[in-house]
Image 1 (cartoon, helix red, strand yellow):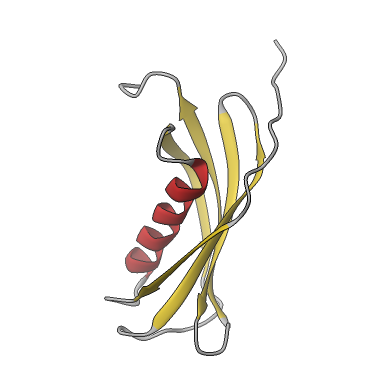
Image 2 (cartoon, one colour):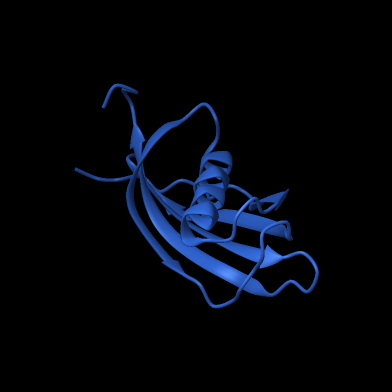
Length: 107
């Protein structure tokens, strides 16, 4: 069985204001960016997520989340993202993940 690599999509950036600044809030931003870079027409399931939190942020702070596809096969996409404060572009969270690309959304 061979797997086919596809060309990664261009990075996507989403700008938002934090409603909260804990790990769960930042994880939701990363998951939204992953879904955007993969495309709304693709059904996915998160298989793995690793996040680091090198910076700090406060609720109400403007941030930019950027996500990109590192590589993709027929069934998996390896994705990365970072969240930066808009004011000084300091990285407050960095993530990498693996998404299962589902052919049947009920999977």
